[in-house]
Image (cartoon, rainbow, N blue to C red; front, side, top):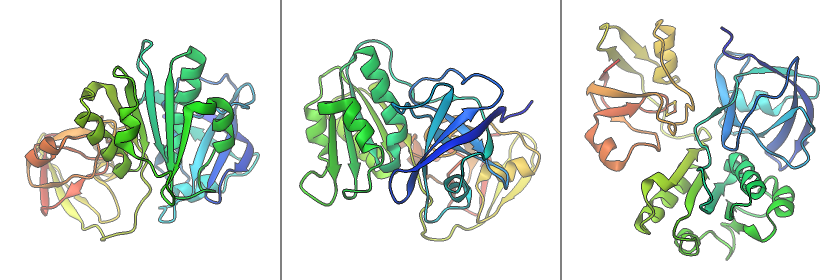
Amino acid sequence: MDAHPLKLRVQSVVAETPVIRSVVFGVEGGAVPQWQAGAHIRVLLPGGGDRPYSLMALPDLPTGAVALGVLREEASTGGSQFMHALQVGDVVSATAPVNNFALHEGTAPALLFAGGIGITPILSMAAELKAQGTRYRLHYAGRMPGLLAFLPQLQAMCSDGLAVHYDSDESRLDIPAALGDAPADAHVYVCGPAGLIDAVKAAALARGIPADRIHFELFKAQQPGIPNAPFEVELRSTGLDVTVAADQSIIPALEAAGFDVLYDCQRGDCGICQCGVIAGVPDHRDVILSDDEKASNKVMQICVSRAKSERLVLDL
Ligand code: FES
């Protein structure tokens, strides 16, 4: 079965900021599949592998089209460069929409937080909440004016439901204050870098918001930093030994060894690739495990996490 059955032809590309483009695609040979706010597709990359992009409910989207927001990452491994270079007429293959970040059912209000390119699913959420008549407030944070994409569309859509925050001035996002203004029964949604997610989660929990009303999705650009080291993974079920190279994660290493692995987001926020750790010490890089779960070293997300020990034995 084709894992990337959608054929998408680029209809338009707009530079929203110096590093973010909106790309609108027409669906070749069929209708746009059903999707709801928070859904993403995975676009197949020329060198193999794929990359998730949230579907955007842009207000002026032509009928029969889908839109993605694409960030050009400085330390890209190639995927964001490829997506950023797409031109009108190019065709890409993609998965059907998947949603690990759906809105709650019911009429409880929503408090939305977006950092940088994390606005892409949050914009769709604001559009859906508005269409439903559900109360919401959107806090959109970035480093400085000029770097926030889709601001005109959001201002037109959300009017006074939108609060814009810049790290560079007094409008800087005050998360406890934003949560303090929220209705007691609000659901909280956050998408952006790990630091924003961690801060919103911690502040929301401290305010007494139950964990099942805090929803998040990580948007993580590759950061240059300490180089990764290779390590060994042993699969308990087969005894198979696999070397994970410094420039790959556990999932492609296992796939290259012929082992089928379940995964989706590849950002450490959906939990689908979680597996048990029988021996060794994981280097946790996800945002889904609690601090206690990470400290236990009994489970890990194999899409992003690596090893502090030279060897891991996984319950796979
Ligand atoms: S694939 Fe989503 S957490 Fe690993």
